[in-house]
Length: 554
Image 1 (tube, rainbow, N blue to C red):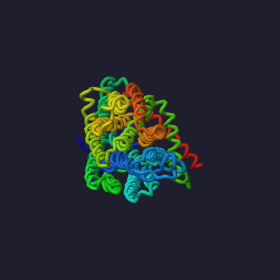
Image 2: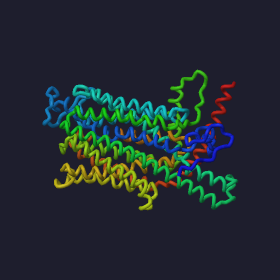
Image 3: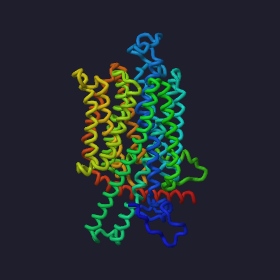
Image 4: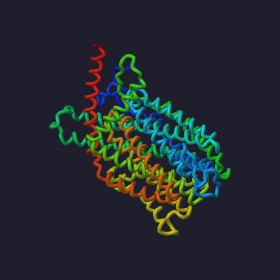
């Protein structure tokens, strides 16, 4: 599978899997950069970033941080009708003071996450230019990994009176995770493009097509080979994405299982929750080391700098301008635009379902932290099943294209809020009993695991070459930007009704809206549009570079 590419007889460096002779690709933007074939070690290093960071998203953000913030909010809450009277553990209709206003304790956690994803969107946009241009993608991944890990470790000091500190550190950690995810995801199309199987297929296609610009020469054979190459790229992208999700959930399972034992042995105390979050931070830092050692920098094209120009300002300005132009250019990429619209809705609803379900289980079903940690374990186990099952076997068995597979996953996810809505009609089912949470956790795990794998790999196919970080920044902005809306609306509904069950109506409608959008995406057309767009952007950037150099000379 990992056959080496023949070495140039004139090369002076010894041949090894980590130092292969660059092979010119069809994109001149990459011909002078690091185009060595992807090695096993590099793939392991890339998988390690998910293994390191995913426990923070799944265990900390998914379970422990909502519990911590909700509990800290309740410990600092007062009566809604009399703010001078502190609430006890049995009181209802309590509110917590936040920045001059009062909100429901459950809403305190939701508003914190809304703020974090807003700042996360600003951050990933601002850093996307440095991640795409120059040798910064890996450096940013490692820097934000360290910042996120440290913020999780410092949450051990978030005692009862320091609920503002807990909110600030949660925001820093979530922002860092978003930045790490963007940089890590941006490596996926690069690794696929330089994968040995893809490169071997590229070389075979070129050897049989000596006149690539002449469409009349070998018209059928050339198209067949191009289709096979695109299909192989899609397969490898889906497989690697599925492995990444599976590695992440496996890590989260290990952390979560250990956390359950510890939290249960301490009677679900707040200190035990903070200690588990600290352990998540240590894990993040520890397993980022293989990523630092094994993943190549894979630099992007050089960004032109004028003499004396501030690099930070130049990169941030470039990032925002590029995102603006990219957002405008999405109109030329019909399927990318449709995908991002669907992802905006899907990401918002799926993320909000998790936070809402955990808070619902704690406030309405009165489940302990240890029991909710078990819920998290069930989600992770079935998340691995969903990631591997949908990415590796789903398309083979069901024979569905990626867009229709996503639509199927969305339909499965919609069953969760639909089941919660049944609680308004009957007391026998519809989330009135703790056991129902465990069942729905399995359904959610399968759907979100498949969603994480298939959605990321599908978008990687639609990304124009040379624009990985920029488009994945737009992907993250769409993801995190939408995630501001869901928790905010959920918090507003909870504040007004003091019944979090009403939010299931909102989530169900959102998911139904996403199904027809994904169903009507044409992935093959999107791949062709991405290649054409990549060539056009490359030519425009080369012209702009020449103009800048001429102005500097003058």
